[in-house]
Length: 283
Ligand SMILES: Nc1ncnc2c1ncn2[C@@H]1O[C@H](COP(=O)(O)OP(=O)(O)O)[C@@H](O)[C@H]1O
Ligand SMILES: [Mg+2]
Image 1 (cartoon, rainbow, N blue to C red):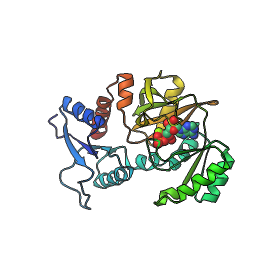
Image 2 (image 1 turned 135 degrees about the vertical axis):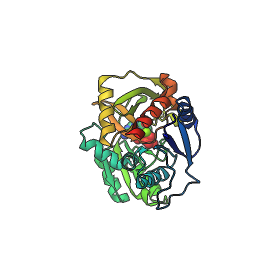
Image 3 (image 1 turned 30 degrees about the vertical axis):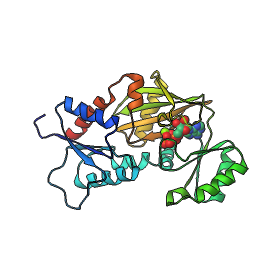
């Protein structure tokens, strides 16, 4: 493209996903500016050379969010937007939004002290799930079987550094089959879906869960689009579980990895993301 359009890619390292994004941009003749999150700085004055749109691909949620605020300050659109990163990057805020939008989601109670967290766990019943409000890859989550375990896990959690560990995100344990579902939403469409299977209760592909393409049923498409809209839309991965009362959405990811989904479905997801970015950058 010779019209000055430039695609920014803000990332930590070039993972397979970023490699594919760079290749898809190259195939379209799109010029790319790589922004290394460890190297860039954001001053208050708008730099003279800025990309037309920036794909935020940082591994760190904090870096992603602040960079998106930085680009917003410069008037440069980002995917995801700062607002979407702030909402979808935080499980507490996501749960509030999903409930407000009437999207079925597991029963969730938020508490701010070990004592009230214990009451929240007793309220949702055993087994319960404790998650960090911000996090991914299933890290630092716990399945709590009884009151004795609850007290011990809450004691451990209280000893962790950082203010976010004093937010206790308590959720009912959903007795799903040994799998969950992951869809990818780009704009107004759901581009693909997969099952993630594991004998462990956390089925994240990053934890070694095996993946397989899943049929895009009407219910899956409808819920995925509503969940994505609930946090502001764009490029979002939606996590769902098959609960006894039907599909429930438990997470929306604003900087999704998509290597596993691309492998399971054969869909060129990077190409679709780049096409969407071009569309956003030209608005
Ligand atoms: N309430 C729950 N009941 C049963 N399994 C759950 C529950 N919440 C999460 N899981 C399992 O753990 C995985 C990781 O949870 P998730 O909320 O998606 O956090 P992360 O951001 O770490 O991916 C899910 O994909 C799912 O397999
Ligand atoms: Mg998840």
